[in-house]
Length: 453
Ligand SMILES: Nc1nc2c(ncn2[C@@H]2O[C@H](COP(=O)(O)OP(=O)(O)OP(=O)(O)O)[C@@H](O)[C@H]2O)c(=O)[nH]1
Ligand SMILES: [Mg+2]
Image 1 (cartoon, rainbow, N blue to C red):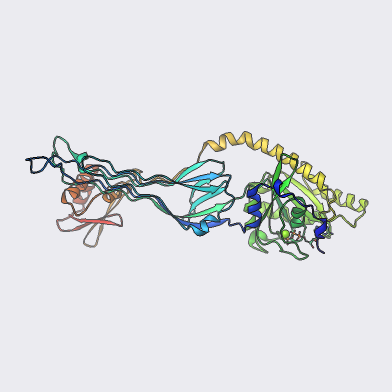
Image 2: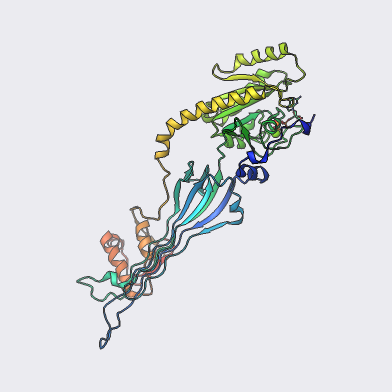
């Protein structure tokens, strides 16, 4: 059985927003990996003022500029993550080093990266969510730039008139991130394979998904814009068919359900040719439930498809069978996607339920959106430190000290002295002594730094 192309409603091109056209045409990428690095801070300058008749003027080395942050911005103008197929690395500008005469280095310009609304950024290794961008214009600092190092002028004090060292700029935060696009369609089409989901989408929207008389024709989700009136349209997502055991990975599994996780409404399509329509309905319900509470709680419109060729009495009887198992607040409709029967009423019902659901979500959103995602900052936390004996010396772990070490120029004895002073103040030196550190032993700080005690 195939669709007669003449039977398809032609959608006037100028009616379709450009983005959606692009979406239809493009193989949309919904998950991708990128490497992100914020800019390093500029080094502070070590310099002495040039003065006439003075061998060495006062210290005048300026501070380095700050490294740029990598900031993601959710944008309605983006619909796919396809751009990241070509841009695997996102690197922000470093800060410029400090200059002579107390001149500050210029800070890097923050890097704004546009991503589609619905993008979730996670740390690849841990799966930790770094940002969940759900609203147009929402911004999230994904990686913070390193602070600029202080120049030697900064360190002048009553006790230290001639600081002969400057700080290095901090490194920018580096992240291996996974970007995932959770489409925010209004309506999610679910059902057993062959129920006619793609056929329905092709009949009511601008999408032209593949349709065939065998299960698992649809292998990746399709999106389509469905015009409801002259002013309004809804975005429908058609996903691969589900079968019993999808939650355990049967068929194509239920991985694609994440695409309908955020839709306002689920449209559950049932093939009238099923031996038992109520059982077919229940099979899908069980899989939705296995996916988690989110989907099963969504308002559903249950639609019996392929009624062409059946008399009204038979259809009514089957609808009655469905009504027994379907919750009272779900609507049950009958259509023929191929013949176009009942599609008007279907669109009308969907629009009504979506509007109701949106109004509800709007109310809830006020509180939901207030908590803009927790962002990852550079290692600014005051996490505790530890001193551990290792071969030939001691290992110190602690974010704050590691950060200071990162700013230290280990080739400059005075800079190392300052690091030691910080270690004294924080009690780390004391801990080293207590554990029996001896001159000549190596002290390792984090994974990257070391000096001789
Ligand atoms: N008689 C009749 N056949 C239909 C109708 N809707 C779809 N079909 C047929 O059912 C078959 C499956 O349609 P698809 O749209 O590919 O079904 P699907 O639910 O997208 O299937 P998967 O992508 O495999 O999950 C095709 O041969 C369609 O022509 C209908 O209203 N009446
Ligand atoms: Mg399909």
